[in-house]
Length: 296
Image (cartoon, rainbow, N blue to C red; front, side, top):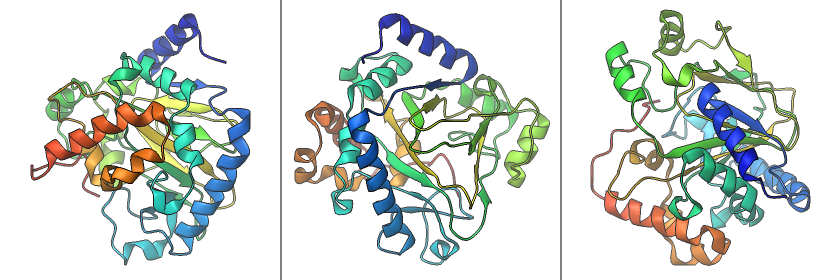
């Protein structure tokens, strides 16, 4: 059932205040089982070395080397790549409720949205694993002055996790998305710490729930070997014409497959204008230097 204007207003207010919002009902009943099957299929390919676009235990951000991948997998990237042959991912990425909530949270219409990333977060198979406390678009080494300036930047994006199974892996510090880190937070960010943090809250998700969060909220992911995780993780953008700020957070993840003329025919028409916007953006950035958001 579509979200009403008052429901969307409530969602936006919660998101702006706390830096995140948890929402029910983002996976239509008819897509839930197909998504679970597809998620298991691509996870198996990643774990068996049949898919190279992955996230690696022990290394938080790309690029990955062949040596890196021996440590195991905590995520599968580029779910809509035709080589994975799982069309249900694109079907859901183009679903009305997901697009409507995302547009509202970015303060734009669906006509302004840009096709971006869609990955899968999974439990590791060899050992428990945790990322460090971090912000996605502010480097750990940033000074307080640099961080202040970085937090003023409008990112023109919305990021989300939607759980296929109950998920308690994401922990965040509510309302940290619009302030400089404390000395304790900065130390943990620099040293790769993932332990308890004052004010932290586990963003627990039940099957089918999603959390939308500001990518500069201070957060950490903790992966339990013993608990099955299949959580859909992605984002959309809405950069104004001529704005290239999304490049540093986006293009290190490898979206070249979207420029293949045959790719467009395989995704829902609801995504076509968004895909055209991404491919024009990638074309405009060709040959230009990009300082990526994170180094490793």
